[in-house]
Amino acid sequence: MKIPHPYKKYSVQGNAYEMKIPFTGHPMFGHDIIYTHPMNHGAAVGRTAENDFLCYAQSVSNLENGVYLSVGSAVMSPMIFEKSMSMAQNIKIQYGEHIENHYILVVDLAESNWNWNKDGEPPMDNPAYYFRYCKTFYRMGGEMHYLTADNRDFLLALHQKLK
Image (cartoon, rainbow, N blue to C red; front, top):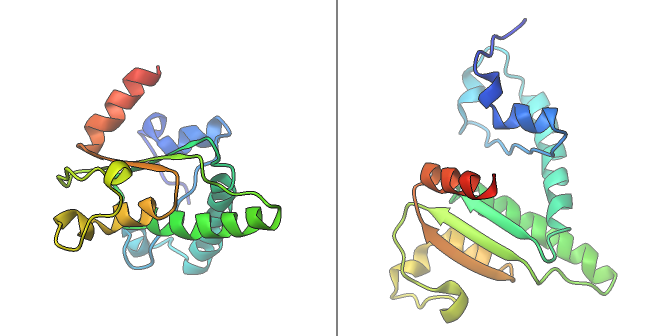
């Protein structure tokens, strides 16, 4: 079966593939729309998800002096990052190394004026305490900053700066 893809040139995943840039997908069973498609095959999705997770974890193991952007993903990004960082740190520790000099930027729509990097984890009476995704990233070490922004606006501005 061939599935037409008229907007292929706009596909981030397709362009990453063409440019041989690693691209990983991390599906949540029952959560994503793909599970209603007649060609969906759970075993294939699971096998591919495991491969993608291990590829992602390998990338995290090389994060020393690097940057991690989490844009608009308050659930999946911190969860897979936390597990990957744990795996990567455990391996690095065996060689007397650590991943500790990295920069994490979390971009989301929720308003917050808490400075995680300067003030640390907020007290329980501060609404920022319940930004679980910020708490997760903050606990992973490095330098973590939060930016309140529309994801589309942020990505467009980033693209303009990088080109």
